[in-house]
Length: 151
Image (cartoon, rainbow, N blue to C red; front, side, top):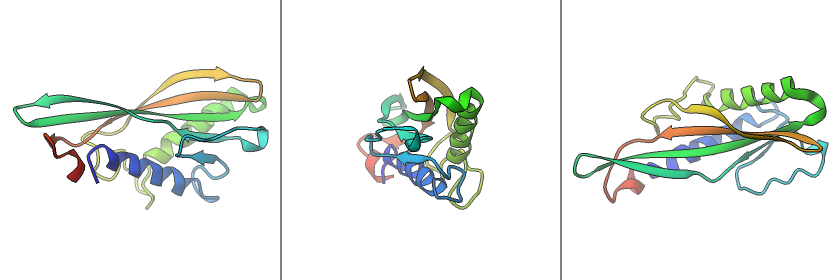
């Protein structure tokens, strides 16, 4: 697994694991494949993992320091209000920082150099839902040039 794919794989695993009926995200509809369609209130609350942006800086002559920025869209029933929506965001944040063994692990199982940094991104209110993008900054492990995929 590579320095870019490993943290995303860990995030996907955590969202799926915590989305079980007894998990932190129990009752959420979770989509990690970009295709979630909210057709009505029965589809809420929902979480969608969006495509990441990547960037790198060079450290020394042959080391790169990759960073991923990815967002998670959290959608809740508009009729349940802002406090409910913020509660859903809190659950997503906690699930991302909790391993599938229940341990607090904001470093995504060793795939990051620093803990996940989270901030709110774009937000909107639609007829049925309140929607927020939770932006994640992932400082991945350093890699020699041309060796990102085999870390």
